[in-house]
Amino acid sequence: ASELRLKSGFFSGFEVQPTTAPASPDEQRFMEAQQKAEAAAADAAKAKADSEAKSMQVAAARRVLLEAEMRAAAELRAVADHKSAAMAAEVAVEQASAAVAAAKEKVPMAEQEVADKGEAASAARAVVVERAEAEARLSLAARQATEACMTAEDRAAH
Image 1 (spheres, helix red, strand yellow):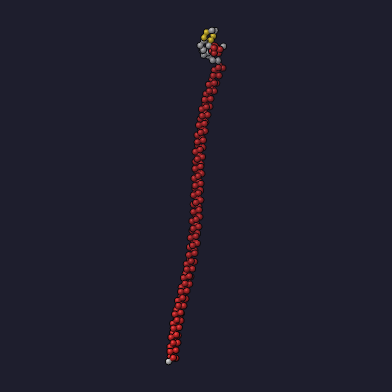
Image 2: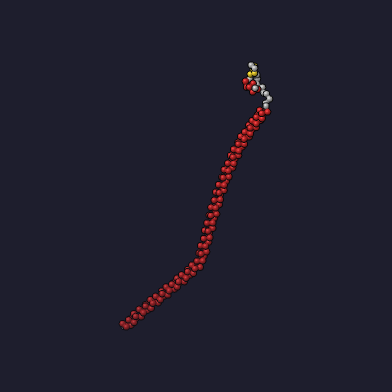
């Protein structure tokens, strides 16, 4: 009845101003439960907003971490490339050192060949000189023989 009185605002033909009557224990419990539910809903909304903010922070941190991992991987590849290049350079140096050592081993043989060829050239020059000297002696002997023949012919003619 009190609810009806409050709703209609009339009682026995007179206008009655709504008054707050003391609430019943059930109404008090309902109101307290409603306030708690509203507070819980507000807390849940705040928790959801906080969770979404944290999720965004986690996503940003994951992006930063992923970028850092990608940079680290690129740096590791660069280091590996440098190591490969250094190893290739070491191999090239070793090959060049081996080639120099082989060339050094060949130097005495080449020097001996040059010496042998020099000796052969000297011997060939000596043979040429001997031949030239022999030809000169032969030419001289031929002239002397020719002169002797002419002298003998001249004597025979007289």
